[in-house]
Image (cartoon, rainbow, N blue to C red; front, top):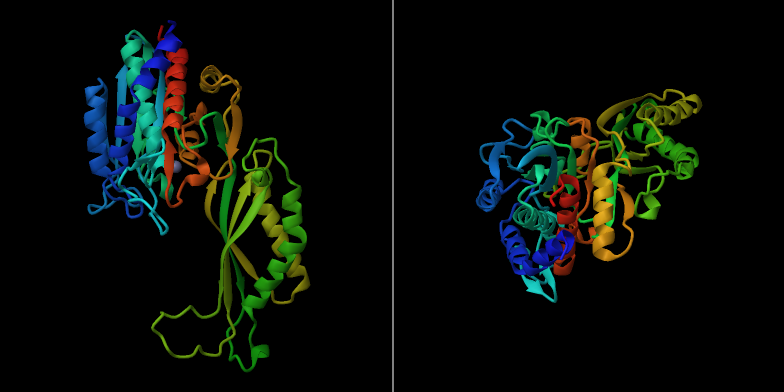
Length: 427
Ligand SMILES: [Zn+2]
């Protein structure tokens, strides 16, 4: 038997271990927010990876957004050197999960196994992927102990809330620098035969229109900021949304509807604040003197951020031209540039080769409509050779009765092990 077949056979033989590992991870309820049990899951991973010969570090993102003594942001980075020097392949998984929500028919933290699936919050997003990468690395190390380079596995906090206490912090500390790591695989649930090359860009901003407060019985004495915002919305409907729909991209974004520029109006608020639920009085009659809207603009690799900003300014300027007294302000809240790893990058070609080997068909390339931790690896770590590849169906993430298929995990682990063999020259 060749090495590829031996790796595949050995991973298949460890299905029970893979399932048990996934169940153990699901049973640690790492809910974020607020960020529970990070230390517990890091300690668990620490024991497991030490046993497999990794050198481990537990790192608290002290002082990072979200970190507190009550809810400390713990991360684990484990590294195992090969026999000779060479390149490093890093598997990065986030250890946090989102709230359970309603509608579950199984215990969200029970790790129940049924009909070839493991159920629970985080099963597909992404404890199943983390478990698959651990099994892949363990089997590879056992069967190819003479590999060159290094394997790293990290479990990181807070991906679901922006990654500041996780990958962003580690990237700032140099854990994702190109000198240390050459290839990154993030086992997010993107379906077992798809390779995710990157994501669109994000620009979040708050747009404020200004007015003047006055008594509501004499609105002509004031200036209604909400009506000004109404004019902005009207202008967006007539000129901006149609223009965005025309901006198509070469990025293979899925789903199809996201293969263009998009804009969501996240919230809009004008006038007096909403009162507490137990307030039983009436509102007071006032002309709103300001109205605020938060926009979430997703942009393409073909666009640059200055262009995206200028487009919104142009909408507001057109409104200003037609409305006396119109005044506005734009405040940027958050930005992430689009990123897309080259298809010729070794991590891409190795995983693509492994997908063909395991499934007997070509891999599909996709780009995510939203961002994930690759943004920090790209921007802070300056590391370009990064993909997301892992088991599980993306649509199940954050839903009730989330699950990961056992066969999907086994096959993904096989792909990961074959990619390791290709990148680190195992045998
Ligand atoms: Zn995720």
